[in-house]
Amino acid sequence: MAALLRLPVFYVIHIALLSSLSLAADPYVFYDFKLTYITASPLGVAQQVIAVNGKFPGPLLNATTNYNVVVNVHNDLDEPLLLTWPGIEMRKDSWQDGVLGTNCPIPSKWNWTYEFQVKDQIGSYFYFPSLNLQRASGGFGPVIINNRDIIPIPFGQPDGDITLIIGDWYTRNHTALRAALDAGKDLGMPDGVLINGRGPFRYNTSLVPDGIAYETVNVEPGKTYRFRVHNVGTSTSLNFRIQNHNLLLVETEGHYTVQQNYTCLDIHIGQSYSFLVTMDQNASSDYYIAASARFVNESLWQRVTGVAILHYSNSKGPASGPLPDPPNDVYDKTLSMNQAKSIRLNVTASGARPNPQGSFHYGSINVTDTYLLKTVPPLRIGGKLRATLNGISFQNLTTPVRLADQHKVKGVYKLDFPSKPLDRPPKTDISLINGTYKGFIEVVFQNNDTIMQSFHVDGYSCFLVGMDYGDWTENSRGSYNRWDAISRATIQVYPGAWTAIFISLDNPGVWNIRAENLDRWYLGQETYMRIVNPEENGKTEMTPPDNVLYCGALEELQKPQKHSSASPLIPGKRRLFLTVLTALLASSLVFC
Image (cartoon, rainbow, N blue to C red; front, side):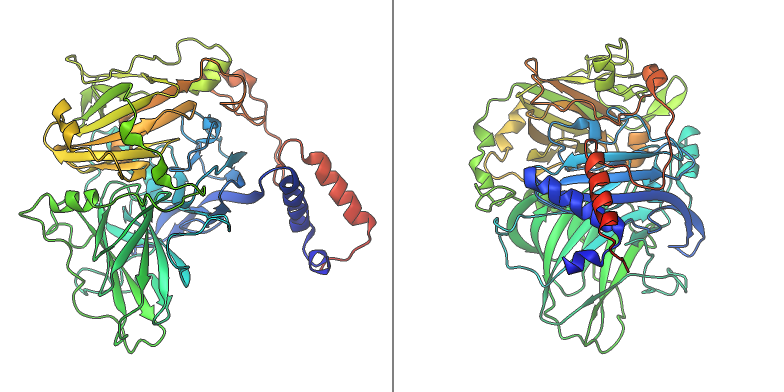
């Protein structure tokens, strides 16, 4: 009690709220995120970036399996904002997903509170702003969902936890990049690769200017650390490696993997991985941490490399010499794909629940529908440069789908997304996949574009059952992994190749399927799955939250926001707040 009395009132109130909620249900964690513009020079050029609570990248969001997460987002940008939480499944609650099909944007100078439960989840994720290429200017940060104490992790407890956020970077901000795409131009080559918001260590005096701040990771010899690595970039797959150190892969996007060592690993746009790295070198000098571009002309992109420093506490000198070699697959285009196929689900490990993950025999479930989603290079539709899926370029929604359903607004969208490419001219449309609740679908991404692509499915983890070069056919199913395919939410698709996933449609709501390459996404390469339980009884899908925003056809329902410096409280807890505050004041306590 004495320790409690020394805390500021604000934190005591939050602790009281947390304690009271924990008595009846799962615990709560609270965050305030204020998104603003700041000036930074990660590549030596002053530019405008998006910070969260003054930090670039933003702060860690840390929770535990089944916790309720409350994030009050203050939009101090000069344009609308949404935060999304890729890989976090938002069970039954697409209202919190943070994309245009599910949420109205948070207007400039407004705040909005997300509240969701990380139900039956563990692992490494990140958050980011989902609108209008804003992620290309920042606004992103890491998310860790920890195991409950009673559920063991399938490896020894690491001596430390290290997060590395990597990604390609432009010295032009998102508004300039948007203007380029609107003018029908390509974004061009990025200006560099950042690691934790910082530019490269000066490993080469001709390629890297002097004076750039770089990231240093401090470690102790002999200890083992968990490295959580996220590719939050705009359009570039990156090869990640640590000089002279093995990467023991243990987890990706909430699922434990078969544990195997890699000297390097390709991490594609939007993907997250966890590695165990043991500090087993002699520390004669520091070591390079490198993130270099893949599936591009490496000779032109040589300067676009992220370099941080791994510093042993007993290091005898700075890192020097050339970077560790990237993969040499000029004559072997299957190297990266074979590496991707080697990533398997650890079917003997417990995940968020005590029962083994492998007890879900996805390979024996009958597929109810198949969707073949084909991409081609951007083309012009109505004079504008657009990107497509199955010949449809998605037109931004102005009224979120389930909000339109709740208020019986007609004409907002169509449930006619084609299950395969059609022989017709490309068009812009708002066409959704009409998903069958509790169906089990096969989705094949056929990449006939010229670039490496990633695709993300909100609300679900998907079994990545197969990939290969060439065109997918029904005979391709013979190569599927039907036993221990990795389950994840962000899937890479190699140029001139296909990737197949299985999805169990047990999470009702409206869920985004999109290209994670920001240029393709901005140009319309996305759709949504609308999944409604026909026997909905209020238990399988959440109702709209009390603080739901209105826009588009329903904008007249939106009331002006009353601004306050205090964080909004969870509905139904305001009376508790007043009770706690009254009790504290009546006790005549002094807070230091």
